[in-house]
Length: 293
Image: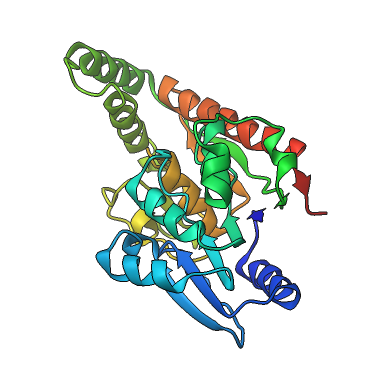
């Protein structure tokens, strides 16, 4: 089964109900280190971090131990968009050993619709090998989703004409000097530049917390994405340039509303539009899937 958008408490309930109706001798829980899942059960359970899936030990031992009486839990293990990733391939070897599989993920995709196929591969790699995403697949498996309604609300920031010209000059310089480098560096650099123009809107004397790409503001209430390790509300200065890391931020903080400081410069408009398109892709899956009420 695949379960999307559940809290750890809700995941515990799903596992508990599964154990009541299936004869399981041992549970193997694979998890990404930032998202541990402690299962309260009398069953024997082994926890394996995502990074260790490819290690020689425990790889061969697990191939011997996992059998038709084992339950495998994949908890927040969609960590790359590459379906042929080595870690995924090793996990598939384990998953083929047993019919008992529960796949937990907070969002249905990382960024593209085809990312959902990674979760289906966990259930049955052979069945979905080489196939692209199709909505019919949502009805062909035991899939339930809790709709995570994430909103981005823009908080406007005034930018002087002088700074608008500085931004234009920076943008033109980045394009002129791009050469053979990855073009994705342009929006990354431009967002940092635009973020610097938001400094005047930051209030170091309030309890409000902010998140930025790095620690360049040197304020006690501005945190980098790497520093955030629990629930809370943050005003976003810069979004993370990697969608996966931005998704992780939303998982960790449990935020439903992103308050984004918006200069209305082209880069901030681009960020807002890209978020809206990502949200539309998630919503399209929510509409077609069986959703928890």
